[in-house]
Length: 167
Image 1: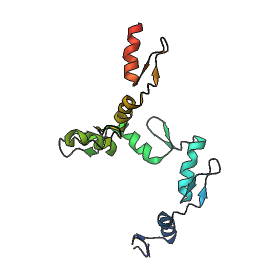
Image 2: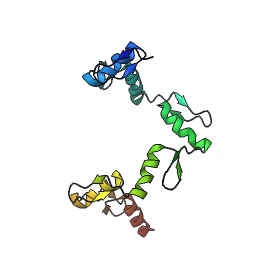
Image 3: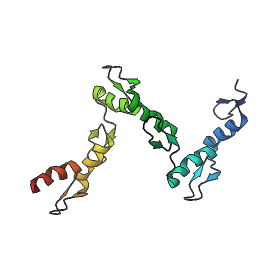
Image 4: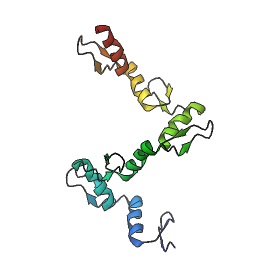
């Protein structure tokens, strides 16, 4: 039963309060403000979830190892470590993954999708982190510096390889 319907998109809700919160997506209204950083939210529950950033509260505890999480969804993902469960399966090769995001990254192996493009040269990359490292070719940025000789590098792996020369 969905007696409360959004006039904007037609989505139905069991409770009027859920409809009111949903309608804020369309209006952009954010009546709940964080007292620490003044960031605003559409619902009180989103504000409470956000406030854990400031308090470091981790109320969701793993019953196996006691590790705490700020969000229940992160605890659920973490528990796959203990159970070994890999519920997400690649339709192409059958390999299984603990998270949907890991499956998505894996699937780019089969499709050769390269959604991250360099604005300077147009080259495409499978991972945003690879694009960030690549862009240093164009910017000249070398953020990884050797503490022994002050030589700098575009990636941490290049610095690590260089540091072996000091041993």
